[in-house]
Structures are given as C-alpha cells and as structure tokens.
Image (cartoon, rainbow, N blue to C red; front, side):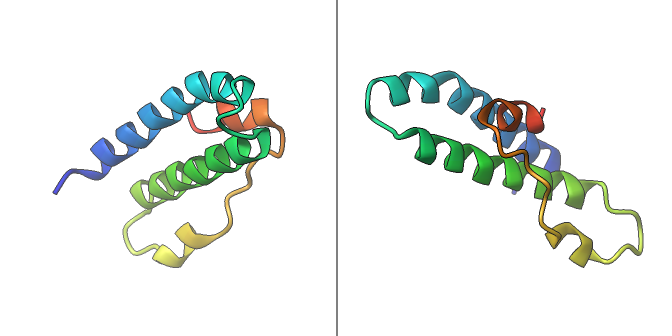
Length: 83
C-alpha cells in the first residue's frame, strides 16, 4: 500500500493533467464545460479530504474530515484550489 503523501501527490498530479487537457477537450467537444468543472471539483474535493486526513492532530475526531470542503464555484478558482 502506498503512503498518504504519495496518494496526495498523485491526486495533485492528476489535477494538473486535467487542468491542462480539459480546456482542449471542451474546445474539441469531447467534454462539456459543465462536466469538466464537475470533474475538477470532485477531484479537488478528494485532494482536500486527503489533506485534512493528513493534517489531523492526535486524538482529533476523523469526522472533521467529512465536513463539506468549501470549493470555489468559478472554474479558474477551482483550478487553483488544491495546489
């Protein structure tokens, strides 16, 4: 099994790839703008949850991880959120 740090790094790499290719896919009609934004938001939320888990203090309840991440609603903001 891989470490939590490796998992976070991989999610961040995947976000970078999607940020780079999704605009071209939208322009080519392979993906709608709505779907692209939704996929970025979901992966950004995953990154946020993983980072919250990593940052838990000893004895802190893991339920805090599951609080809804505050994600920006604009595509450009989502692209910068989990870096």
